[in-house]
Length: 232
Image 1 (cartoon, rainbow, N blue to C red):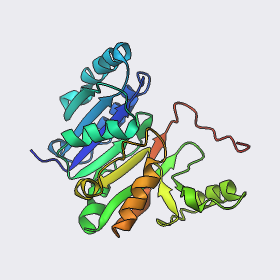
Image 2: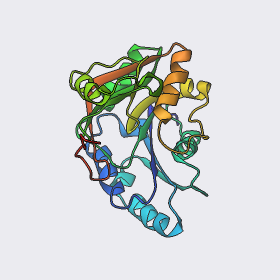
Image 3: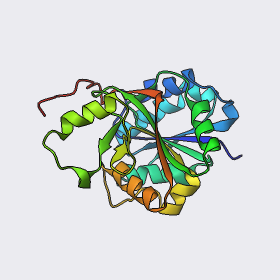
């Protein structure tokens, strides 16, 4: 059965995070349970993987929606792990979610409405709470000013996002699956970090829309480190 939404969570030694992540999905469901599926793709070594699998499959979310655990045969990076989940998914919309992200309110109806209203929409992000509330960043090739870090905080505070100069935080992204397949999904040559900038560039080349919605709020724990070091 084709789903409306497929949530993909790539983990690596995330035993302390995965339970709350899954609970936040369960506690904020606002669409029919038949519309959603969840994949946990685990890049952890065998010992940790066994523990994570037990946590996932014993979670009460497994009694509510389709929840599947996949142990990756090797840790070939974040993008490759997500591509494994995408290959197994049936949803028209992909939700790429870090294990240290928690939903704090229902958002799924709003997400589906965005994609239904805009056939050209490829990528959707929301308001990140945590890590100085940085929901988007400046594209690597646009970094020019020594004051850019301060300006970035201001732009985020004012929700001033520009798709050709900035890229959305990859902690939580919603993607049109068909359009993502068209551009080749995640580039597996990128092991970790800057995947968002890469897929943003490829979507822009196809003239697809990228939207930042500040009313789609979520919490990013950054592995428990929610304070941003201004000096750094």
